[in-house]
Structure formats: C-alpha cells, structure tokens
Image (cartoon, rainbow, N blue to C red; front, side):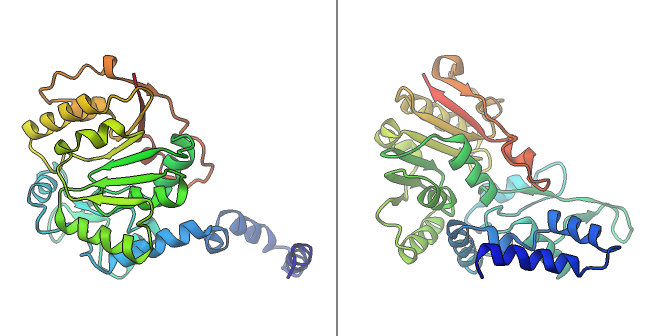
Length: 301
C-alpha cells in the first residue's frame, strides 16, 4: 500500500471508531511503543540481533566468575545492587523478565514482610539509546578517524561505531579473555573484521594505540575492576598517552568523579577541556535522561 492510500485507510478507520473512544485511541497512538518495530532502522535491528546472540551466551547477570573484584565491589554497595547489562536488557525486556519471575526490581527489606525497596542496577555497557546519543549527538563525523574503546567488554561501543559512524578503525582493548572471545565471535559472525579489531591486552601496554587515537571511550572502565592503586596507575597512563591535540575523550562518569579519591598527579585543566552536551535532543518521555547526563565529552588540549 502506498503512502496516500495508507493515510486514507487510517483516517477511514478512525471515522469508524465510536466517538467516545476516539480520544483514548488517539492518546494511545501518541504514546504507545507498539509502533517501534515499524520505525527502527536496520542498524537498530542488527544491534538487537547481536544483543540476542550475546544473551544466549551469558548468564542473566552478565557477569563472569572470572570477574572476582567486580563481583565483590557490587556486593559491597550500600544498597542491594545487581548488574544488568543495558545493551542486552532494555526496559521492556526487564519488565518481561520480572513478570516471568526471573528478575526483580525490588528487594525485601525485612524478610517475609511487605516492606520492599528498589534494587540498584549497574551496567558496564551502554544501552542502544546511549550508543545512538554518543554517535549521533556527542561525537562529530568520524570519517577517517580511529576510535579506541578502553575495556571493550562485550564490544557494544565497537558494534555501535560500526553501524552509527564512519570511523575507519574501531579498536577494543579488553583484559578479560572470556569477553575477548565473545567479541571475536560476534565480529566473525557479522563480518566486522574490516573495521573492528579487539586486543586482549592491558590498556597500560597500549601507549602507541592511545597516542594515535582520534577518539577514546571509557565507560565505567576501572572503578569495578581495579583497586585504587591500580586505578590511579591506569589513569596516569591514560593521561600521559591520550595527548593528541584536538582528539576526543568520552567518559562515564565524569573525569572529576572517576579521579575523586585517587592519588594521582593529573591536572585536568592542563590536559582536557570539557565540551558541553545537549541532553535534550530526545523528546520521548521514556528517555533515561539521568543515564545520558553521565556521559561526558572532553577535548584534548
């Protein structure tokens, strides 16, 4: 059916609706997510397919037994907290899992009572919305540019960069061998080898890569995986090697928050300049603005 015919069909359908129900129907049409499948572009579909592949390879909490320190730090949070990967599990999927009893958004404050409180959720991956925000609204055109994702984990930033940017090369540096294998599986299956490369390395051995990068992305990269002394050492290494004038650094959380409490000699004012971001680019009511506001962009001086 062509567009003019489709418009006429919809209008005719509305004319057949009982007048008393028409306002409710129009309100539903304005707010429903049932039309999402018709508005998604192919890139979104591909990324959701990748997410499904990864879900089938990982436990629900998306944490591996080899992540000893991260598991310990999550357990030490002041309030009960669980890891829910934002790329693999969007809000709709979490709701479905809660309905099936496989996941909960709340915990019991007093066992056996009706006193409950919200569970804290932590993610070490960007959601689809956050990826689109970064590549469509945070970063400039990346044609001919090299991007490095520090702690690439499941490869989310790399896959997003493949579909949503023109970066000539996307490098992921990941210390955990299990996650490197998962990334290689996806890269091979979806034929990403022309632009994506994953290095099973400690970022503190990749000075040349960092020096040549046009964009470096760091999402919750050290806090849960290194002790404070190791975090300080890693940040010192980053600050000494990410020095290409005009290159960009994207972090979650802010550099100020990441460095807070660490003993480093990093002088932010001599290294970077923060670039203001517009967090109001999405008009949808269900956009997680708080998550977007955790994303910060810096220009290397």
